[in-house]
Image 1: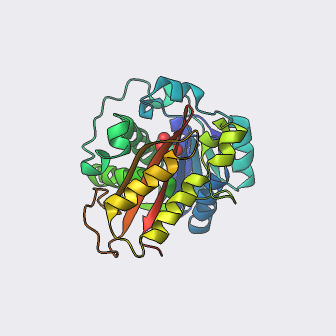
Image 2 (image 1 turned 90 degrees about the vertical axis):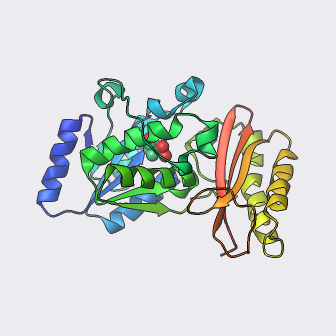
Image 3 (image 1 turned 90 degrees about the horizontal axis):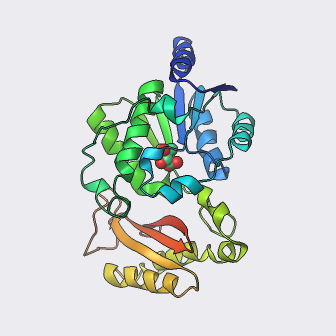
Length: 283
Ligand code: PAF
């Protein structure tokens, strides 16, 4: 595995691979890698000949300086995991390499970026669009892989791809969970042992809601019962739970029990903000 820190070197190795006819897969990450990331890499390796993984904690997508400061950084362990996963190139740039000058681009990301995370974290998705568009420009991958834990992020990236005219396939990959149901996340390491033991309840409550939705199509009631159940767990506070159309991400008022929906939740446990989601109806 090559570890590369400059854009010029990255462009060069990818150009060589393309000349040799390789299909290029890109897995953008912010590091603190876990089995969820490894599952994206495995998928990329199955479908592509040459896999690039970027490890970059992108400052422009953090609207909260404390979150940026405390975001876990484990670059040596990350490189060992990437090597073991059979990655061809780890791209590990500095902030100065990516942003030699401030990125002032403002993307017209439309309604998918205005709800939920877009409403709670102003500027977050514009920052995601900035870094992902730069990575797409450097690598021009055939396919790029993203985890469905950040469900809304995928919709926003699709929109960015459309407006910027990138020619690639976005591959959404299922949420990877611990055996107890907790969605894998780089932020989980910040939970205390007591919080970690309770955290899987988020998924269990969402899964129960999908069960309930089989004979109750009242979205308002389904939403409220998730909020009440999570808030009833000592140490958990729901920031939002929205049940939205799976494609437009706009809230739905009426449901026929068939339209694909996704329920997206953010929960505070102390100063750790966890996100998760679940699809309705039951598969
Ligand atoms: O999902 C993430 O880890 C980040 O938002 C991404 C896509 C790597 C961009 O920094």
